[in-house]
Length: 324
Image 1: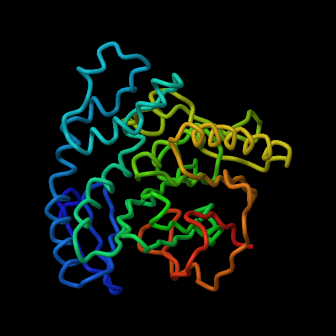
Image 2: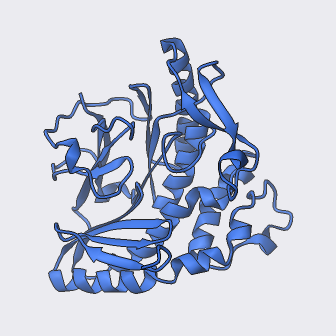
């Protein structure tokens, strides 16, 4: 079977794995079995045309979002997933003059598009995990818990995330130089919670770019030298980070935290957690330790930076908890 042909398989634990080309989804739902199965079938039908539709607008989606309104109307994508990407990224260009292309939100936007299939009677909660960028459906009173893997080269559970339905947050995304996409910064990981996955995806990219300093131990190369089809052109992306002094780690994390706090004040994100060389910053004032005996070998299939954790009720609408 061609890697570009849509395929699906039910996993041993009841979740679904949908795959086509670069899109790799893990999907789970809880609720009435018949309602969940109907939602899965609707999701499969909606999934199959997504990649082809995106490819049809790829040239536009790899172009920088405009920093002003000149010609903006003529550049808005036509497809529903592409429009989600555009809307999530545009504020960073328009408000802040930052370079960003709609591709920064592609994974989250695909997940958002498909999670709509689960908003139906009988489905209490559902998630779609697109390579670590996650869209959620939560009925009132429900919650969802995940773990964060800060360094995919040395996988361990570094933090727990709890999202209550009452928080209004329905998206989670992680970015960093160690991931599958390029980064201009040096963060091992930046995890963002937002109103939807597309918003979290774009914000994680921006915040990860701001976790940065100049130091001889950091190696960068032009993005176009590493991948012909990159949307970053010749911008230098991080390819290696050597041993950094603690002062440099703190300075880089503080830059990222300042960016995240500004985005939260503007309503673009809910919370953010960022890590570098085993050190962390969060937009939450208080971080509570959390312990788990979940083995790293239990990480979900083909996921980067995230793992489903056992249900534990939370006293807060949203919390970020580093694991001690």
